[in-house]
Image (cartoon, rainbow, N blue to C red; front, side, top):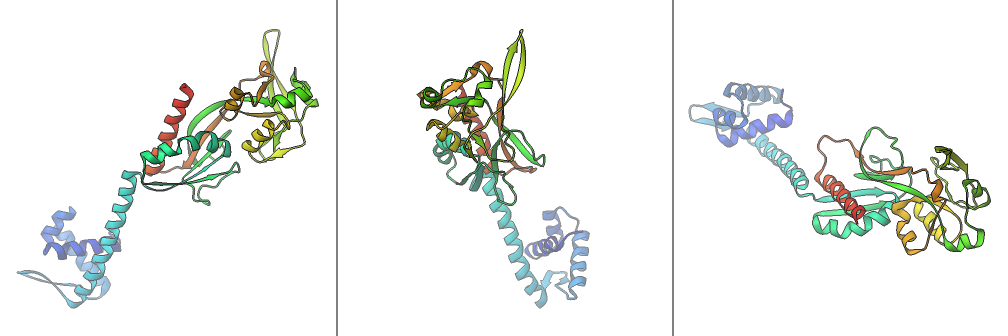
Length: 304
């Protein structure tokens, strides 16, 4: 059974084509089905809409009023569908991205100019936060987060996996010394996160008689922060050691602003970075091209 919008469309097509047969061919229905639908519509409204004669169809006064309103509604529906389809095909509209701060500043910001040049119809709304995000509540198209996936109701695409390193500024190491073993961290100021998911334990690995042994080293310090970029800057300022992803600190290591620490005990764990979005059967083009562009850009960066 057609809904009211469907009934209106059938009625409008009947009026436009002038007879049931032509309207039936356009709508892929039978003439008898069209006739029954118009009769049901008239019964429901309690008025006659068309007068049938050998010369065709003629609208009643009520039919003319109903046609004017129904035609506008059908046109609005068709225009809405065209707008959505056009936006999907042309990858246009507002793209809301909520990214953790390190990835936004070190991976996204450098490629935004090229992305917007490639898709000039997109308006990028970028929010930077390391806090958990509710995509529906905050009306975000994409959330970029590091770490283990938690919300199974969301669709995810992996952007990269980044090794982690313990790092410190040369000035800090000159003042407090280079740790030789994970146990030495008890004597050092270790920067940590104040997020609920954070643990005051850093993992390491030690070889004993050719067998790798895991070391879970408790750490502590006088500073806790809510995002990795603040931690990175505090480490560069010489305020303590930090354990951060390679994509986040490698430029600082290469420039000498930070120095890797305890690399012989690095367990080799890798921190995944995922793009999260609401699981949709038909993903909007603006979201799809953004994800494809970011993944391609990261692959290019990792090859260089």
